[in-house]
Image 1 (cartoon, rainbow, N blue to C red):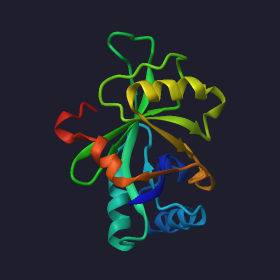
Image 2 (tube, rainbow, N blue to C red):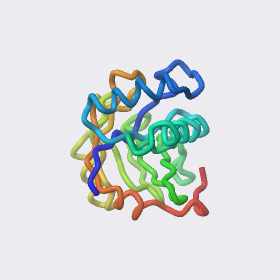
Image 3 (cartoon, rainbow, N blue to C red):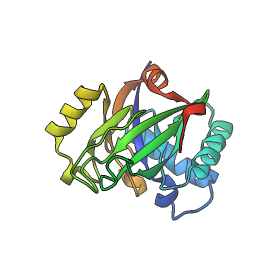
Length: 184
């Protein structure tokens, strides 16, 4: 089933680091609907707990209304290339899989180092588009069989869904690595 998802958002930050609440859920669901998308991934920096708690709250009070995929955004420094630090979002899928996305390529380093278990790369990031070299990203995606994502990287509610990717949910699950291999 194809769905429209914004797979890189910072909802905890957008709501000034408040605990999950029905008020936040109401506002976020309204924003998701207003953009005509099916859901989002929450990828706040170094905090996956908030996104899991928020997803559980939404599933309890608004079952089946939107897709909320919990995750986080973290820095990676390849051992073989320590000056090429980059960010990756890890999305925690139902059933225990982890889907890893290379965030805003070209920020911090112009080099794009693809390590094992990267499943996608951002080719369009509303917040960071100024440094993404799209031809280079497409070449890397083709070379490594990566999905290319369009994301908002929203740090404020109004930007959630401003960019999104239409994707088969099954494709995320197929590419995801089992949680047992997850290194965090």
